[in-house]
Amino acid sequence: MQYKLRQLENKNRLKEQLKILQEKAIEHLSTHRSQLLQVFRMISYATDLQLVPLWYKGSVREITGFHETDLLSKVSQWEQLVHPEDLSIFQAKHHMLLNSSQDAPRILEYRIIASDGQIHWVSDMAILVHDKDGKAIAIEGLVIDITRRKEVEEEFLNRQAHLDSILNSVQDVIW
Image (cartoon, rainbow, N blue to C red):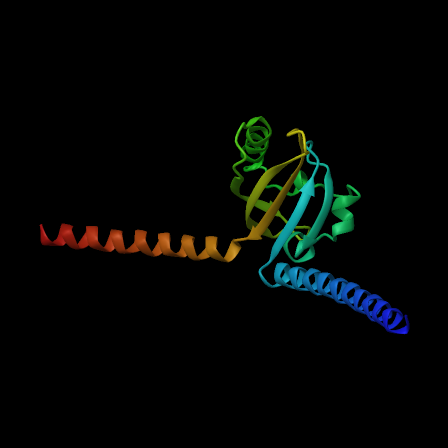
């Protein structure tokens, strides 16, 4: 009898230790996810179908200049950050996502204007979230700051155009 009680106590102690380890693992994963989002200048987010934000995590302040709570409390909404020249494309892609019969993600590159006036290029990958009955209930996505990549692409195109003009002028001289 005493042996069985000791076994039961050991099982209970092991269950408690397992529960503590699980909680620590979840906390550890959450911390590392947040750190990765910061390092790679990414924002994960969820909105309802009308683009009302549910949550933002990651490099929100670094990319937008706003704190997550500012965007959640509608001090500034994401759509208001979209560059005016890109707004119609952004809205069209949102409409396409909502009316798509496929579960494929929508990927869009566009500019946003941060609170300090700086323009950032972002790549936004969004997908519809469905309930158990298949009804769309939310949008989840990942925004990645691609400003540096866009700057390098522009520099490359400028150099290419410069080289092309040199080559064209060399051909003129040869003729």
